[in-house]
Length: 374
Image (cartoon, rainbow, N blue to C red; front, side):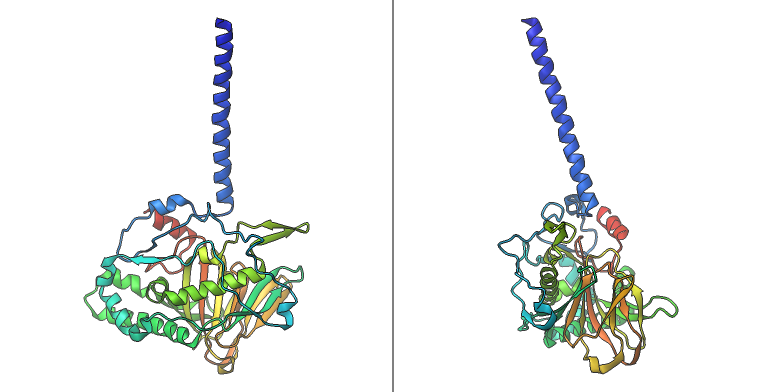
């Protein structure tokens, strides 16, 4: 009996040890899987502290690592590749796992002089805008391998929304000027000053005048932010960026989530007045880039937007006014030389992290890690 008890006890003990090792292995594998796909960790949300009145947060956050959005067969929009070569397809309302997140603002923020001034500068443009446009996919750009490089969308934004973007951009620049004359704290002025930049890519490499609109865009005119994400979602579905095609089978691709569930890394009002080009580059660290033309193509000569489909392929695009092109941010792109006139655009980059706070304009991954861990 004693021998039987010892054998039984030993079996139970061995089983428990095996179970512990198995659970530990599964946990390690899950962590490696998340890191391999660059998912946002839920612990980040817990580590974020309200260390300043300049920080915007989501009131409801879903962990990207735990809840990637994958279109199922029941809600995937049917797309015929031939439709986009010669015809026009009207967009359906985006189907998302998580609608545009609601934002709340630290009450102390609205007490800051520059916020009061920004609201005053915006005036009636702060009123919520409901776009009556019907964004429409017109062209899908592919490389020789058949992979989608970019998607063009016409009627992407309304004239009222463009007026709002310009008013917000002008308000930010006005607040920077007024802040230098006011009794604002030095840290407040520095945070605000970062939102405008004469951005040069280096000698002979071009640049632009950039006003960083986020996170003012989401908080003051959230309807425009929702429009931009809706455009990205439409393109994401049309391009089938939610799947990988391997050996003829559709395999979910967790690297590219629904744009509606992503944070706005940066949103920029870009003016090329005085700038003649923009060198080829990648938007490293972002997932999708949405470039909206807010000038009539007849207003400037040259200045075509270009994409490198591959080492030996490139595509030139000159968008109509209020049209957009959406592409994966790791695609090499730039602006051809502008020979005359004034080019102007509205560009937003989405990434897997939360929205960038005031004063942290287009942060790197390292800057974001430092921010959330402070």
